[in-house]
Length: 432
Image (tube, rainbow, N blue to C red; front, side, top):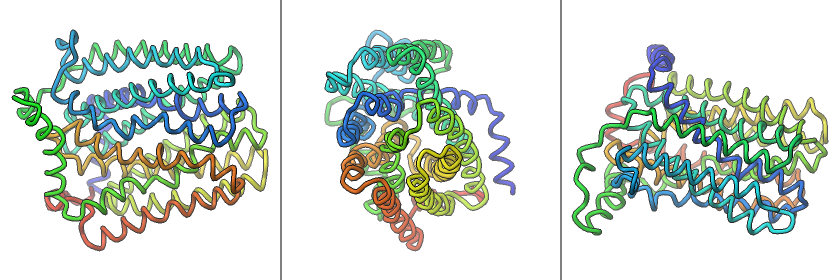
C-alpha cells in the first residue's frame, strides 16, 4: 500500500494544487463548443445529424500537435517577458474570451454556420490552452507526483466542465444563452490573474537555444519526439491505435447524450441537476477509484479494469431509453456512466503522461492527447447520423460495441509486454 499512501500524500503538494486550478481553467471551455452548445442546438431545432457534425468544430483538439512546437520553442510576441508557458497561456485566454462572446452573440437557428465558426475558434484556443497546461504540469511536477497530478487535473477539469455545463444551463434558463456565454467569458477573464501569478517553469536545456533553421526546428520539435517514441516502443502502431480507441465508445455515446435527454423530455434544469451536478460527483468518485486502481495494480491493469467498466456503462443508456423521462432512472444512468468514465480516465491520463518524455514536454503530450481526441471529434461526429438511422436503443448498443476494439488492443499489448516503453517498465516502482 506504499504506492497508494504516497499517491494520497502527493495531493498536499502546492504544485499539485496549482495543477488542479489549471485543470479548472482547461476544462471550462470544452462544453462551450460541445455538450452545452449541443443543448442550445437541440433547443433551436437543429437536426440530430447536424448536431453530430458540430462535433467537428473540436478538431483543434486532434490537430493541436501542429502548433505545439511553436509553443515549446518560442515565447509569444510582445509577451515574451512572461515566458513560454505563461505568455502563451495569456494569449489563449484572450482568444477564448473573444470567441466565447462570439458564440453567445450567434443565432444557431438562423445562422448555424456562424455559430460553428465561433465554436471552432473556442475549440482552437481551448486546445492551445491545453498544450500550455499539460506542458506546465509535466515540467513542474516530479516523476513521483505525476500520478497525483493526473488525477488532480481531472478533478479540476471536471469542475471546469461543471461551471460551463450546469452553470451555463442555469444561467441560460433564467437570462438566455447570450448571458450564459458572457458569464463564462467573465470567468475566463478572471483566470488571467492566475497565469500572471504562476511561476514560469525552468526552460529545459534542449530548448534554450532556438533552432538555427526550419529543418532543425522540424527535426527537434516534431520528428525528434516521434523518433524517440518509436525507439522506446517497437509496437508503437498498436499503442497509438489503443490511444485512439480507448475512449471511442464513450465519445460516440457522449456526443448524443444531451440530445438524447432532451428527446426523452427532460428539462434543462433536470439535465443540469442530474447530468451535470450529480454527474460531477460520480466522476470525482470514479477518478478517485481510478487513481486508487493505478496505485494498487499499476497503470495497465487500471486501464483494463476502467475500460471494461466504460463498456458496461453504455448499457445503462438502453435502460434509460426504455424508462423514458424517469428522473430516478436518469440519476442511476448518470452515476454509472460518469463513475465508469472517471475510473477509466484517471489511468488513461496517467498513461499518456507516463509515455510522454519530459524533454519534449508540450509537443510530445500534444501528439498523444491529440490522437486520444480523435475518437471524441472526428470519429464521434457520425454519432448523430447513427442515432437518426438506428434509433436510441440500437445506437447505444452500437456505442457499447465500439468500446471493444480498444480493450482488445490493450490486452494484446499487455500480453506482448509492450504497452509501456521498455525503459519506463524497468524504472517503474512497485505499486505504480
